[in-house]
Image 1: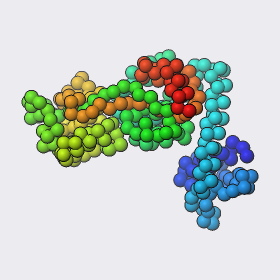
Image 2 (image 1 turned 30 degrees about the vertical axis):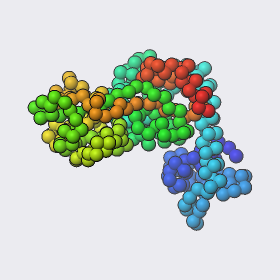
Image 3 (image 1 turned 180 degrees about the horizontal axis):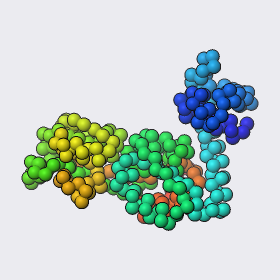
Image 4 (image 1 turned 90 degrees about the horizontal axis):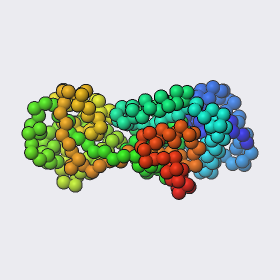
Length: 308
């Protein structure tokens, strides 16, 4: 058994059980991967994959357990490399952050600017996706940290740390009737077509729950993963928008007006997530502290210990 065989195993699972795709991703040959997987199965004395001819169709039950152990071993091997790098080159390396559009566009720019100024030799990568995708990127080792509002706390394999709370707001064109309302209510919002986030993004579940609690069915005519897209269609007069309050910037959004909706929808919490027992470079701890000052290295390390 060797690490290369485990890498082949992980990549096959990651590529939807397609050996050809795994071979292309790893810059090797399909027969070479197939041979190494067979050797691994022979050494372990059990089949990892179910096959139909030369095609892999599923992972066996023991194969799923083997895959989990293989992923942990690969993560640990990567941690060994990072420990060495930590002491050889303290301020150089790479950091990959998986996050949503809202965080990347509105919450992270100032943090990224400070981080790059402090660590000019560190290559910083931002991967955008929905909360499920970014959680999977951290679990697979493709990303070091995930930052999002929805879903991260649902993964037992991840350590999640609260960063900050935020509220939604209503955005409308100038002179919209809602701007003259003395008290905003969900009933009044429900009279208008609504443009807001896709269900997986930015507290959308809390928006739905708030309307449902009042036995209201909002007229949601358009959803998007991007607050800028939502604002574009509100400007066109297609409806009122419900977005994260951080996404409204008066200096830039001069053709829109914002109405506070903190009393209508529960607050949402943005979180950082990382793998259990993950080794982090010093600059990764510093990035988290820049993003959420209460997340000092000691606080993060303690959270990792408590959740083992």
